[in-house]
Image (cartoon, rainbow, N blue to C red; front, side):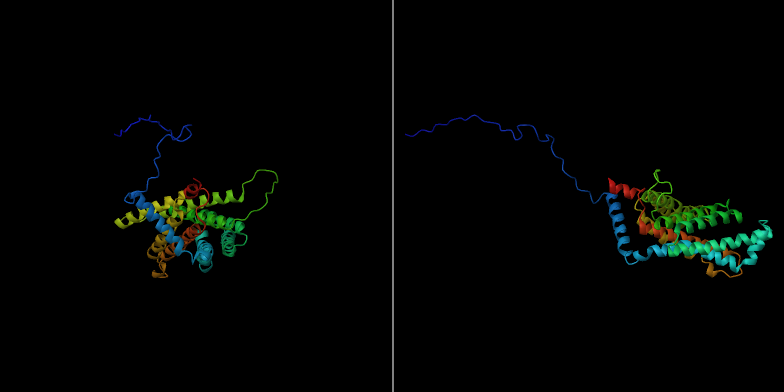
Length: 309
């Protein structure tokens, strides 16, 4: 007769981490993004648009700086041509309405024409850009006082945007140079470029603000203003700046063709000159936005901070 002997062995608890070196908290892991989340959908759409801007702008990318610089100064070239072709009217206006003495009115116009032609040519050729931009900035300020338009809100906002475009030109062409006072602290080229890009981005959007406060309101105008204002804020803070600037380029170009169609107005109509002036100024702001699409928003922007963190 056989018997079975059951020997009860003591149960031993083995510790996986006897020294307590591991993290005792359970791992939560990574939670996958919910594709149905509205915020995720917006992010995905923004990423798609940004990628498309990069893809479709590639063939034009080598030419974007030259196109942008030309469009920025085209308003100065048109202004110089208008002064020359309307010399008598310009002299009459300055003497009769602005009370310029005979010699001063001629000198004022000659200096403006020469500065605009020389400065615009230098910007297009990317030669002595710092001096060219300074000369064109001086023209904007002098003309504002000379023609008595400095306190006109629409003129003021438009010219702020033109100045923003000139800042973009300066940033695009910025070169390093040695400090005049060796040993003293100075702002590096990179820092200066960041600040000029920031100023240029902020100033560029003032044209759209001028568009919002003038004219009659309609449903379409309200819709375009809301979307455009959102894009302007994105440009100013540098969030998705490239594709928001590209969006403004498209919107302003369409608006410019339909709203400032000076070619459809009779040559003798006084409104023709105003529409022509607005048309070429808008082209200048479009040029500044094109440079922004090419260069990016710079260091002082949300886009660059996101790369850091």
